[in-house]
Amino acid sequence: MNIERLRRQLTERLSELEGRLASVRQDLRKSHSADSAEQAQERENEEVESAIGVEAEQSIREIRLALERLESGDYGECDRCGEPIPEARLLARPETTRCVACAE
Image (cartoon, rainbow, N blue to C red; front, side, top):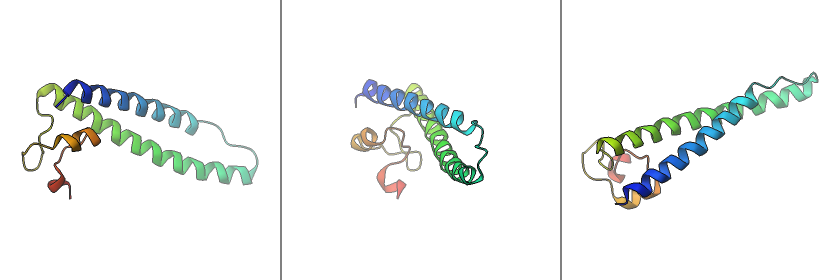
């Protein structure tokens, strides 16, 4: 398994998500329009942006934990059964903590 490739992939994804989260937070701080019809649309957009922010925060936590596992040497081991997670799964979803069987 190419640990450096996985570390780079995780780090790049982390940076991308942190940028997205910062953008979402900035958008959510914007003031509302004086027009009530526009306010309704803005509030709907805020709900979507808020959900995107929550999803980004969760992904950031998962990626940071994966990077910690890389550092500690526990990376690639299923946290449920203890078996190795197949390399193809780690390449597809490097932040995963479970093998395919345990993830189902």
